[in-house]
Length: 145
Image: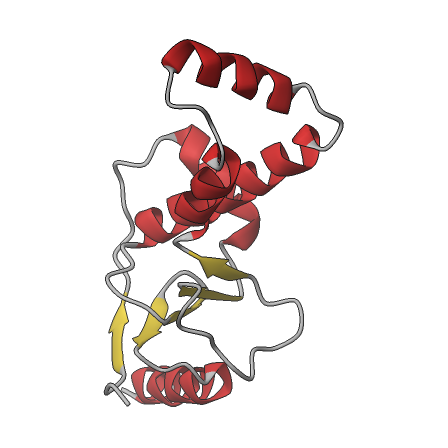
């Protein structure tokens, strides 16, 4: 198991207001960032778990079976986006890219990453409860100094 690494996250001042508003709801509390092949455990209920490879998986899903000819592929995509299930797929894309944007804003360097209050992160610990314990301990030590 990789050794956990704890550090304070730097605030990214270069982020635009638009990007900040996209992820504003997730700015407090616990957030978890991972990829599909690296599951996490023991996350508190309602904790957002962002799979950073979700956009690529959605791209593969939506492009599956497209013809090689660009004109035919465009027509097939027009048909796909006019289907009744397209709004759900569009919402999945929006959610996936919002999570990816949030990870970028926080400066996430590797996964899994457990973030608390947008300020503290533990890398490499798939057990979210254990990562949160590490963060709580570090916060207590910081407060005592």
